[in-house]
Image 1 (cartoon, rainbow, N blue to C red):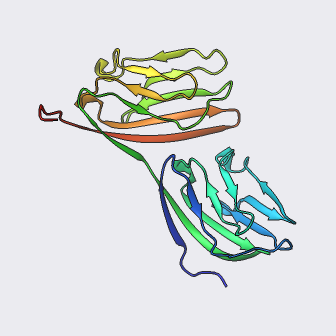
Image 2 (cartoon, rainbow, N blue to C red):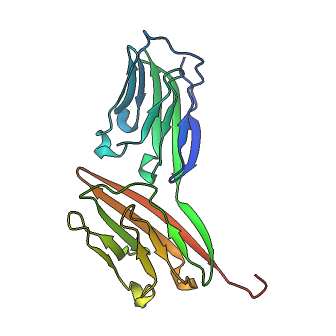
Image 3 (tube, rainbow, N blue to C red):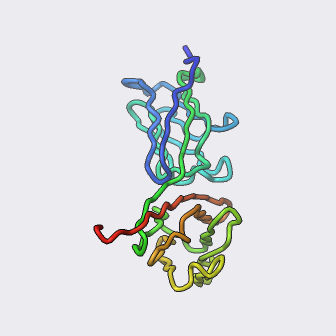
Length: 213
């Protein structure tokens, strides 16, 4: 019997989210299916074999899905904003549970004059292109170009990022040094891979540094 009201699951970008089925034990003969937005099949257990359909929906689930063989529960690893949406859990083609997942932007509070790192929480693959942008106009402030692996940082609006940015070649994380109030705001990360684009957002609040601190 299908639940009339979907279960709401909230999470933060980069922190694993588990959709719990409430099932104690599934049987080998059961067909377990998980469907995402527009009823796209994203994962299943059939005859004891787990399959993830990671290339659907433009590859947003690639390397991010984990199924529990015993309960059928689904974990979305390192989720992003684009994983927000409806999900369905089915047993033998009958919907047993529905979910609405909300993934929020990561927020960080930093003191003036401190440094902070915006972590991608992923390993960059050969050929991936990394772009960091700032503000509501998406000003490009740093990038790693695909095959050449060339890293570049930019001064940004009004030169506020001059000599303050460092990029990690291994994972694309961005460090902002000697932060001031001018660096508060929205940051966007784009990871462009073959056949897919992943987007993450961060919001930095900057608090005034006091002598007592």
